[in-house]
Length: 310
Image 1 (cartoon, rainbow, N blue to C red):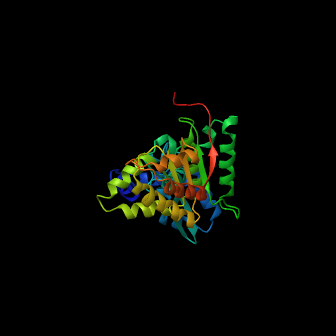
Image 2: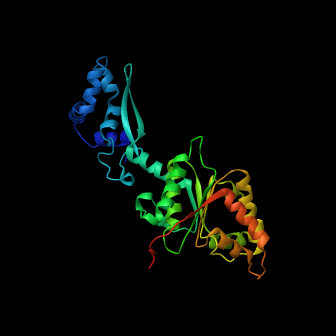
Image 3: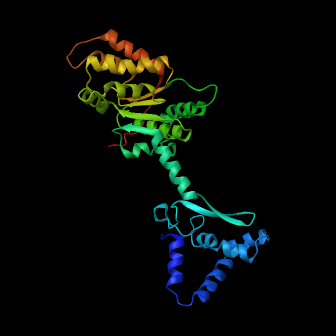
């Protein structure tokens, strides 16, 4: 939008009969319903005061109020996009102030919500998952009940220190549960991170080349809620299992920070999987340590249902 003052001066300059047009403009301003109400509420404003503040009154009436003329935030025509003008009177002076319109408030809340959910290689639809989208069949009742109970405890004296370890067959919506929980946590202003484990392993290996390993691991250790999706699907070395995954889980166990997992394996099955490294070594004791840490930061919850990917 062209600045109000500049457009008004241009309008007056381009018209020969200045007084006639000024009178016409003045009448239009004073006939505005909100300006009328302002003047009725402030009888101390005389003709001179009104003329002296006419520019501000014009600035006010020429803009959209409460998004009336702006179908979407991106098409806002106001001087300050996303802000609606308000008139205030201080003695003999009219002041104009701006406050966020409801569309701007909604937009900022959505952006803030997005920043609270971080992800590594997760599909977009997972980041928008909700509990309303979940299949509430009997087979999934325990998973839903446990999830709701955890979320209800957040912010209370009985807040759960453990997350959940969802396990079940392929394609039953385990990752969707993580997304739905993450979105509910974001509403409570609690940040979370969802990580797809096979890509997580590759991310860690790549970070060895650019010296970002410690920074990334610290981030995974300290995020308020960590979510590891599809643990057991990755091919991992003993180094990753013990030095990376073990270190992250150890820190979160000590700090009582919850971790959520999804897996096709039960914890007993996962222990067997973790015991065998990419080199073919079998290390049951070290695998057992990882499982014990998982038990300290989460509770095992079965999740079954129809394969929705068939």
